Length: 142
Picture 1 (cartoon, one colour):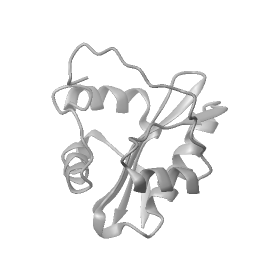
Picture 2 (cartoon, one colour):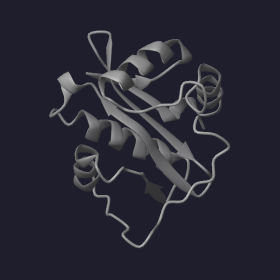
Picture 3 (cartoon, rainbow, N blue to C red):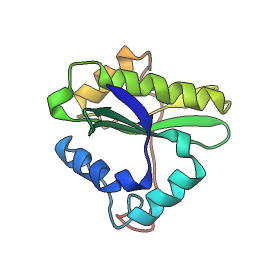
């Protein structure tokens, strides 16, 4: 298993992996080719993929806003789950964010996503019960 920085040439394989992992995404909005390309150009070290025998089997995208780091889009191919691949991607993402100066690293997990909740707790994250997540979106695609 090899973890590497993803490139825009991996875009189609990233989408296929998200499909296999049943991760929702917005291909006409924030996850469009152009938007992912822009993000990769700005933060190439924060787009990580796990490969086995040339096949993309895990993805994690991190973001940093200058004060807080975020782990996003952690997805593992169902055939590779149970091998701590999500935890490995999480740890590599955390290191990349800490190198940038992040003192707080956070992630958002849907309440029904028990596998991701378990991964986050195994990695040392705690649920902030007193925080509500609110959004204001231009459209459903962003």
